[in-house]
Structure formats: structure tokens, C-alpha cells
Length: 364
Image 1: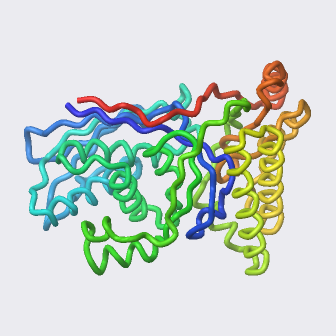
Image 2 (image 1 turned 135 degrees about the vertical axis):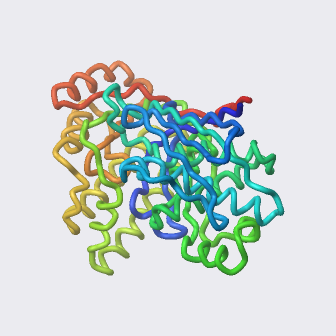
């Protein structure tokens, strides 16, 4: 049996702007994981099992060269849509290489939820996609490179969510702290359409860049969860209502802020990092005011203001509209962590004990 897992993610800065090709963001991999266990099936069906929704199963068979799901509730299909997309993309690749897809059994477990099964906003869709791709690469003995895992995961994700930036996928593949710029997904789609998956994987993807960052040593990262799930797709659609001029200004200012943040992290300068975190929060607040997207929910505002009251720099992490926020303290102010947590508890914010992690070891 092959076992592969991928971590969740948090954004430090650059949300929304990173949707534009070549615009930077800083993203981190955190120590909550999706695990995929894969083995060869003894029958002609590919069977997917997940601990989501209390435990669900989906069977797929090949028809006309593609995977087709058996009849089942829509919620089951929706739960497995990223896994199914990863299977389809990898099987297209191996078919192009003259190999024959095999019926498989995949079992998926996740700790990117709370005890009641509520998602924490840590990028579970990306993590399950990366973990599935990683397991399939090893099963079919493809080249085990980070670039291949990322590119296959992005191709799979884009079939389900075309607007994806892929930053959460990069976090799942490379781990740690990353500066990331998204490729032009339209151009990538055209490469696949014109040349096939295998050729597209080896061509230049315009705009794409990933830069592992040296882990800062003088910062304490705190994470809080509002308990309110966010609809990333809906928030992205809402922010696109901004005027062209306002959107252009947002992109310019976000790029400046994130590039400065990368320099601050590389310099391991906590005061500078805090300045850029506050800059990033201000830009999200301006975007929210211009679009009415609902990025800065009352819960996230409370999370930020209560952390700022004790000297932390704080902002939403990700699309906003719920889910998580972060706070940054200098390491010498670590004695204030308990006070941040107390204020969060008073505001109904649940602290999440998360650490930034490097790539995980996989087993067979």
C-alpha cells in the first residue's frame, strides 16, 4: 500500500491579488494533513472512500477512455470531485505515455476539520489533490519531482475550479514558507489543449514562480478560527465587481506590500514583518469596502482588533468571509500569547495550535 499525505495551508499575505498571473503572495504549509492510502483494486472498479460526511464511498469505472461515477447523491460526487479530477489528469498522462491505467482503491482521511467535521479553512481541497497526485505518481512510477506534483495538481484543480491560484497546492508540495506567483491558467489550458498533458507539463508556464523562504526565527505565529466557514468561490466572484481602476491599484499596492514582506521575512525583522502584515490587512479592508464582498466579517474584525490590542499584527488569512485569521508577535513578546488567546476566547475565536512544516515523508 502507498501512503501519501499533504499539509494544509495559511496565507500570510497576497490573497486575491495572487489570482492574477505573476502577482505575489506568501503562503505557509501547516501541520494538519490529508492522508491518501492507495492500493491496486482486485476488481474493475476504482473505489474511493473518505471519512468525510460520516464516511462515504464512490465507485468509478472506465467508459470511452474516461472515468465515470456510479449513480450516487450529488453531495458524494462533490466531496470526491478533486480526487476524481486528479485521477483523470494522471491517467491521461500515463495513457499518453503508452501505459494502461489500473483499477485502484483510495482511502482518504483528513484532520483539516474540527471534531464535528467542520472545515477549518486550511485548504483541504488542495491538500487532498496534492496527496492523491503524490500517491498516483508513486504507484505509476513517474518522476517524483515537486514540479510534476504541483503541475499535475494544478491541472486537476483547474478542471474543478478554473480560478484557482494554486498557492495552496504549492504549499502542499514544497512546504514551509513560500513566496508564490501563479501561472497564467488560460495559457496553461491552451498548452494542454494544443499539445496534450505530457507536453504541457514540460513547457514554460508564464507567470509561475515559487521561492522557498528561510523560516523566520524571531516571530511567533498565532492562528485563530472564527468558526464560520467561508465560500472562497463566492468571495472571488464578489471581489471581481470592483472597478478596473480600483482593481489595478489594489494589484499594484498588494505587489509592493508582499514584495516588502518577503524582504522582511528574509531579513528576519519582526517589526518590518508586522508593518507589512498591517499593510496587507488594510488592502483587504479597502477591497472589501469597494466590493461589498464580505471579506472582513465581524468575527475576523474581532480577531484582528483583539490581537492588535496587545501589540500583535493581525489579518484574515485566505479569502476572508470567515475561517481563519493570523497574528504575528515578536518572539520577545511571547509572554503576550496567553493574552491574545484570552481576548480571542472572549470574542468567540478558537485558537488553533498550528506550526509551519516542511515537506512530509511518504511511505509504502
